[in-house]
Image 1 (cartoon, rainbow, N blue to C red):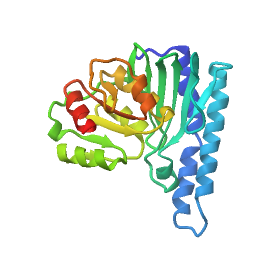
Image 2: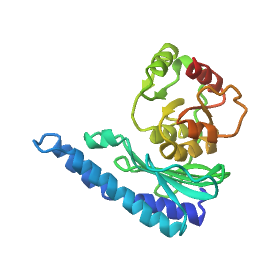
Image 3: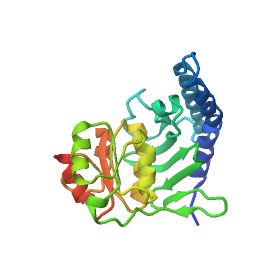
Image 4: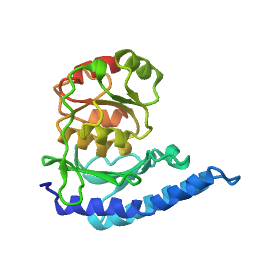
Length: 260
């Protein structure tokens, strides 16, 4: 069974509550695609609504803790705080594409200690607690997540971002590329064994929940350009906003490719 502390249980509830209206909003956006009216304002309203509820609900989880959100503020120098991404894959969401996610993480000092990533349309929620593993929520039992045991880089399925150099280098290594525009969900899928590696570019708040999911499922995460793949410190990767993640067998090959 999954271990969920009271804090993580409340965080899962907070993310679910914040995302509860997104299904309805998404259906409305699908209709707006064929309308003469603009949909950007509607999508932004949805984003703001999710952010507001996350602030309210996480404030109940840990009263008084700072909450840092995507693109808004620098992370605190020390102490505990929440980092949230109200809608990762906002462009997808605004265009009626179902690839988007809501995420929240609790950081304490130099460590991500709790993480939640939720895909509202597929109703998949992934969560992790530092030292206790990563899980996907199930109706009766939660599914323990483990990274795939892929060993052949040429056959690996790799999620990449928008960097043209990375795209070119990855395409030379494997033809199996995924470009979703949702790095938090890419990292969750890596943790679940649905992807073999991820090379992501995003800000701290977008990445930190997915990073804990990967590490707690047996994967490795490093900043692009790092050469010491024995390091367990994920903070440089998060702060750089440009990271790679993979299982143990592929980590060096992905690191070499990303550093070209």
